Amino acid sequence: MLYKSTRGGVGGLTSAEAIVKGLSEDGGLYVPDSFPQLSHEEIKELAAMPYEVRASSILAKYLNDFSVQELQMYARKAYGEKNFGVNGTVPIFILDNNTHFLELTHGPTCAFKDIALQILPYLLTAALEKTNEKRTACILVATSGDTGKASLEGFCDVPGTKIMVFYPRDGVSDIQKLQMTSQSGGNVNVVAVEGNFDDAQTGVKAVFSDEAFRAELNEHGYFLSSANSINWGRLVPQIAYYVSAYCELLTNWTIKCGEKVNFCVPTGNFGNILAGYYAERMGLPINKLICASNRNDVLADFLTEGVYDKNRQFYTTVSPSMDILVSSNLERLLFELSGKDGGAVSEFMSSLSRTGRYEVPVEMRGELERVFAAGRCSEEDTCTTIAQVWSDHHYLIDTHTAVAYKALRDYKAESGDETTSVVVSTASPYKFCDSVLQALGEEASAAGVELISVLQEFTGIPAPAPLATLCNAKPRFTDSVSVTGMKNAVSAFLGVGISS
Figure 1 (spheres, one colour):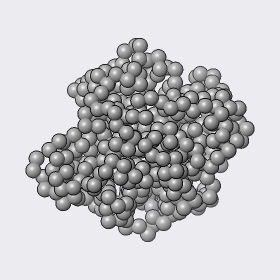
Figure 2 (tube, one colour):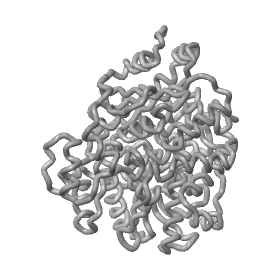
Figure 3 (tube, one colour):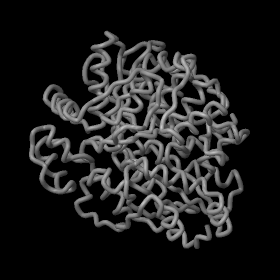
Figure 4 (spheres, helix red, strand yellow):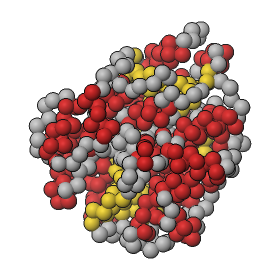
């Protein structure tokens, strides 16, 4: 299996090379040159296996310059009881006869990013050895909330790496902010950006594309890499939990092998739902991937109309990890829609940069209609959904998962589709205590960390240990920068003078 850039300028890379580089020199994202297939017999076999075996089996199909033994060892270390507790890495909660929640919230930072970011450090350090890379990797991360903490936790004190996270100063919850700014480790740094997530993401990409700066880092023994889902090593582990969810439905006799299911995914940067699309292309029986948007509904518009237009108002919402207008991973889908035409993708991305929009031709929309559906959820409906699920099922969900559940209900009502469906639950409600408490009709006037005990007392549901201990956490990192100051911040972190 070899990898190429979505923009056509780079190709023939091994998976280790793609993981080390993170982002292609031509600005594109690395994609596999084909999709390995997953047979129904393989799915049945995986259904009888623990999660780490399911994950390593999927990884082995894509990362064939890693040995099976290596991948199995990394999966055991990443997905063991120490990181994910005793109830399973990605358990399924049965809400009713044909609606299930895939709980991706049981890792060390209580968000779905843990699934990939607990194994990525093992993949990256092994990839550095495989490519004979002697320089130190400087991992730059733009986060809308959850990726930042999960990346910091995964790469904390990992030899041969330094990691720097940029987050929108006013665009994350109090809990998310404290999780990041209190991070331990001698190789980590966290900086707020004066702007929204799109600004932070644009700034990180600008640092990556600065050839003079990259050359200067090289002289000092550094190179840039990424832990965002633009890095193939971040995205590929996410495919495994779609396969695992299907396996769980088989083992609890909800479906028969070959029967199709729907997945509804709260979506911002398009990496999570794209992993589901890759699983479908591998042969996992998926009927629809339902993209759930909050008020920042640029993706819902694209999937229904074929027009991507970021020229719209940006909203700060109660589901902040979805407050994104430039969804980086959509580029990988465009590559598939265009018949793997890097030139066409480059034109779309150029148009987005120049005008803030692009439109895919009619002949490219058939694949969108075949696999995807889309839904939206207002702030009011997000809160109402949290209250309804709690009242009807005594099940507590966060704001992002609420967006997805509302979108799924709307989709079913409009389409009449009664296919067994899975809501991808992406974060613990305790990461958004103020919004969840308000949705349940309770006062939330204290600071975020103080509300953990309030929500726990009100619901009787224990807060996850990694969040409960935040009451004793103290911020280490307090700096903030403008978007134009991000390169200087990286330089200062690494102790490298800027000559450009």
